[in-house]
Image (cartoon, rainbow, N blue to C red; front, top):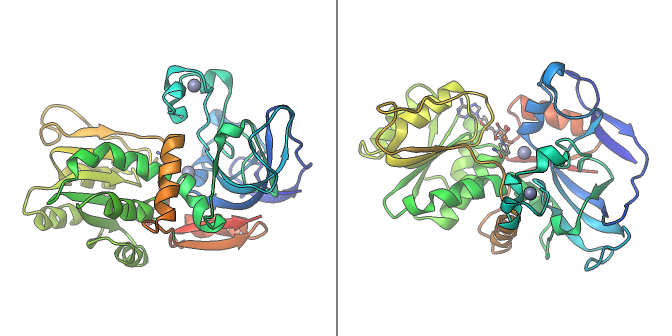
Length: 344
Ligand code: NAD
Ligand code: ZN
Ligand code: ZN
C-alpha cells in the first residue's frame, strides 16, 4: 500500500510503498477514508536527530477515520465496513488515569512504549492502518469522514481545554483565541456552542481572521504588540476570563499574560516552545496556567455529537496522498485555511 512517511531527519515526508498491514490478535485493520494534517507534525519534523523520540521511518497522521476492513483474532463487537474515528492518545487502559477514561494522561504509556498512531506508531496517512484495540474506535454514526477527521485532534484538543474553563465563561465574560488555524477555528465554534462568552480571535493573517469571523468570533484582532491593548479596551479594562493560545511562542504568551483577567485561565495548547513566568506579581491575581494535551475518548464522543448537531463544522481543504507533502508545505507557509485533510 501507499503511505506518507517521514524517513530522514530534516527532509520532507515522502510517499512510499510499504507492505499491507495485517491485524494481529486484538487488532483492527482500517481502510483509511481521511487523515488530518496537524501542525504538530511540522514540529516533529523539525526536531534534531539527537533527541528524536520515535523510530524512523514514521508513517504520519494522528487524525484518522476509516472503515473496518478486517478484525484480528478475538475482536468482537465491530463489523466489517463500519465507519469509525480513531482515538489517538492511547494509553495502557489500566492505570488510574486510563481508568478515569483519560488515556491521554496515561501514567504508563512511556514506560510501555505505547505511542499514538502517527506520533511514534504507524499513522493514518496510508491506505490502511492498524489500531491496537477496538476500544480506541468511536463510531462516526453518519458523520462525513472529511468533516469528521479533524475533530479527533483539532476538535478534541480545544474541547478539552475549553471544558476546564467553562465555569469562568459565564454571561458577560470574554474568551480569547490566539491562532485561528486548524485548532483555533474549531475552538471558536466550540466556545460559541458551549458558552455565552464574547469570543475575540487573534491571528497574524487576514485570511485567518476572516475565517474566524465566519465561524463565529465576535471580534477579530491582528496579533501584534497592540493586540493586548485592543483586548483590554474591548473588555472595559477587565481582560479575558479565559485565553487559549494555539501558538505558544514568546509574543503570544506575552499577549496571553497581558489580556488575562483576575482569576482567569490561560491554556497553552500550541507547542511553540516558549514559557510563561509564573510567580507572585507576574500575572493578575489567581490566574491559572495549564498546558493540556489532547483529550479523553468520552470527550471525543462529545465532540462528534456536537458536530452531528450542527454546532461545529470544520473548514477543510482536501488533498490526495500523493499531494500530502504539498499540504504540509502549505500548512508550514500558513496557507491552509482551516484543516488540510488527506484522502488516501
Ligand atoms: P495551524 O497552523 O493550523 O494554526 C496555527 C495558527 O496560528 C495559524 O492560523 C497562524 O496564522 C497562527 N499564528 C502564527 N503565529 C501567530 C501569532 N504570533 N499570533 C497569532 N496567531 C499566530 O496549526 P494547528 O494544527 O491548529 O496547531 C496549533 C498548535 O497547537 C501547534 O503548535 C500544534 O503543534 C499544537 N497542538 C497541540 C496539541 C496539544 O495537545 N497540546 C494538539 C494539537 C496541536
Ligand atoms: Zn495534532
Ligand atoms: Zn494508562
